Amino acid sequence: MHREIIEPFRIKSVEALRFTTEEERGEILRRARHNPFLIDADDVLIDLLTDSGTSAMSANQWGAIMTGDESYAGSRSFRRFEAVVHDIFGFRHVIPTHQGRAAEKIVCTLLCGPGKAIPNNCHFDTTRANIEYKGAEAVDLVHDRARDPDDEHPFKGDVDLDRLAAFLKERGRDRVPFGMVTITNNAGGGQPVSMKNLRGVSRLLREHGVPFLIDACRFAENAWFIKTREPGYADRTPLEIAREMFSLADGATMSLKKDGFGNIGGFLALNDGALAERARNVLILTEGFPTYGGMAGRDMEALAVGMREALDERYLEYRVATVRFLAEHLTEQGIAVVRPPGGHAVYLDARRFYPQIPPLEYPAQALVCELYRKGGVRGVEIGSVMFGLHPDGTESPARQELVRLALPRRVYTQAHILYVAETLGEMYAERAGVRGLRIVRQSPYLRHFTAEFEPL
Ligand SMILES: *Cc1c(COP(=O)(O)O)cnc(C)c1O
Image (tube, rainbow, N blue to C red; front, side):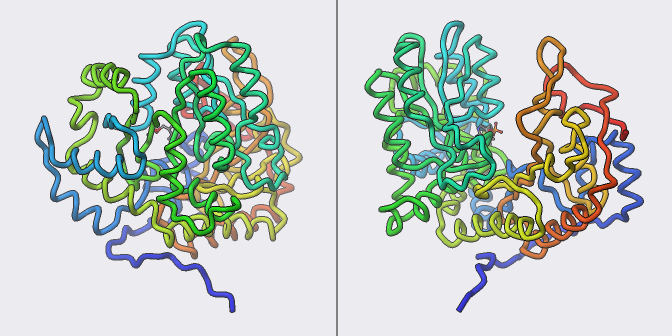
């Protein structure tokens, strides 16, 4: 008999949602210049803008917060945090930072510079920006099948090992200070990377004497996909799988706002003692003393508990089932989504949703606006608004026009998710009348955060 996969928690503390009418939301949207980033969170019913820092903490995490040791040096809370990172990730040196990009910034400050290049499956925006800020090149070597939204391959985050081998041969060890793999591949649709592929990357980088860093933000979701999709791992626990993944690398950068159940937090972990010492010197300049970095003692306590909870099998089963549930309800209604659904978000294909809207009239932006107006749901445009403007001021269509619906961890119930699917179903039935937008104001960099639009 089929048994529903249920939320593996009960709710002790709740936050009321504020309901608005469609008419009110039309006015709010106008005031926000048709850019959902400019809408106040209180005016949003279901917020799927990001899964970063938006998780619900458990009663155990809140309890741990009260035990935080706020000592400047040698904090007990750091020792607890460090012990959990050692246990799961295994790296010798743990450098606490306020979030993931601070760890990236430290690594890039020490190792990047003009003429250098860093390979990855897909660099996340902050990683790319930190690398490019130091004058180095961020190179994406994800396998080609990641570019086909209908390809059902179970590990679409895998690196193309042939291209990595050619890249290493061409650039040589002196110009490649380190290599990375992002698990799961956020910029590539939250798609997982297989253990086999991680092993292949590790072998190639070691052959060339290039250190291997894992961008570990969604390591627990990646471990779950390995357990459920990769032959030979069904009987291993997510913790065992995580340890095996990290045993292949020399270090990791981590945003604990993802699979750490934190509202803030991160770390850099390294095996190389000399590099770790240099990293701590930069840490003191920009973040704080090495036993707190950019965090309060109470943050480290909550994260020490959160990292373990993220590896709980019941939680991971529910997490991935929720994403699949949303994707499947959309597919049933004829709505195109990137396949297969990944670990933290569903990506809608706005070109197929609104085929009447040309790319430079921003179909994905039109979709996020309609989704807010119709249902009070906030998603994010990942298309020509985000990627269409070039440094020389010219504009061209992005490769895809996507809308990302990211699911905060343990925050919404199945009824909330069903409501989102129903809202989109209604919008799909009425899709023919929807028009695109034009930009009336924008900034030259990262324009999607602040651009102002007008409906056509
Ligand atoms: C969120 C994220 C980062 C950056 O972490 P922040 O905590 O937002 O600074 C880096 N890489 C990936 C894959 C991410 O998802």
